[in-house]
Amino acid sequence: MSRILCSQLLRAGTSIGANVQEAQAGQSRPDFISKYAIALKEARETQYWLRLLIATEIVLEGRLVELSKEVDELTRIIGAIIVSTKRASRESTIQE
View 1 (cartoon, rainbow, N blue to C red):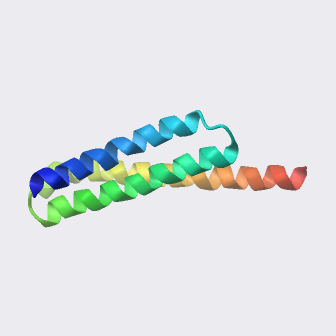
View 2 (view 1 turned 180 degrees about the horizontal axis):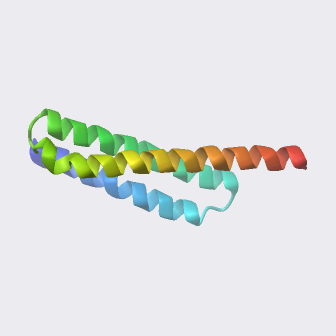
């Protein structure tokens, strides 16, 4: 069971960076937003797996506190990027 949970955590956690990297090469603003939205979903999934590892006591909470904080921060940053990009997109549409 612990191997499966750790594998899921690794998959979701590494997917965050992969999708952010893909967003940087986005072909359009909607593509950029879409890739960041996927990264946000993966960050939330990573939070889930971290909480599950703690709840099942597979990993002691103290060992994951810093990692949990980093994922929370990443989630907020990615969310802010999505919101500000959508806002900029709406503003540029209004000005046109």
